[in-house]
Length: 451
Image 1 (cartoon, rainbow, N blue to C red):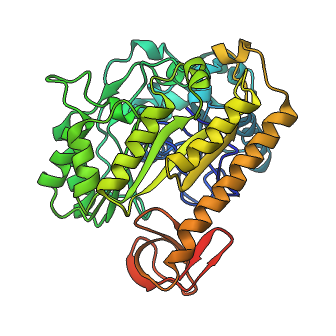
Image 2 (image 1 turned 45 degrees about the vertical axis):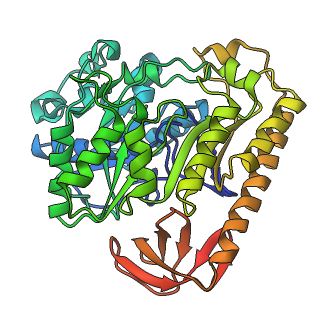
């Protein structure tokens, strides 16, 4: 898992997320809701949280909830938890009459801390938050002594497909096909918030994507906590590549399919085939790398070596040169020496990475890494700054040759979109959200292309 305070180049993102499925949310997800909706949702975190927030809002409205705000939290860093608590307090001050429901990974992992907050009306675990019955007026009208509903997430064995009918006005739709994680990276707390790895059956995932496409969705992003572990719990143990190939075959109207983070050692042949050979699979691969030094990777309890990552990245680029590769990198992991850091820095070039999510290490209570010898904070910040400088260099080196070329752009906001490789584009003209436009790139401005 990775952390907030991440950047693509120097642009701070608005979300936290896992290394298995990190992405900036569309718009300011943590802003205080100002509309008159019966149920508002404030989302922190990864693409999976975005998907689940859409489901929760739909289920809460269907259950009859009114004047309710759901805060969907993230636990990947201490800062993520702090920001969630700060938002809850601000929400109570600004909207004293609203019902505040708090859920998500932070609520699941740090239940006692959130239960002690008087601002919260109802605290739900990660399993309970997806149940319509949690939001009925009768369920919401409970005494304070019964307001905590957080059960053991390790007992959950299934991930249901919740069948979103539309993308809810967003440019792209996130579809949850996997949840949970069976690995125990030493820096990561998220498996204790998400439970064991489990997958949505292929037929159900295909049916949901078909529904989304029929409603007008142009791009679908497959999401999960450990996405490339997909299928290990299903009959026949299909791999992620099997699912991707099934989607491409059975939903021919789908124009764009995007795959979120991949684990270096979990790639299957069918997945590689789809990434390098199918134009409808977007040319952007985000690798859960974390570090480029073998000793640090071992202490992180990652399952790949720097050589594995370099080989994978260069093999993919050899087969599809237009691919843009991204990765998570943690600066200042415990015991990291100058030499180890230089190995990570060099790995950026050796893997031909363009989009970096750079995270200064932050010890998370309850993880083995928090008990390891820590690198001094000033050194951590300095190393993160150097990685971000490298990120800027790599991104600029990719963007400058794009000037003068034409691209298809998916519009996310009136003056903002992304090309197929997920590079951000500032639009000088207003374009409708959720549409595909063709424009020529005329410049580079503040780590964005200009069209």
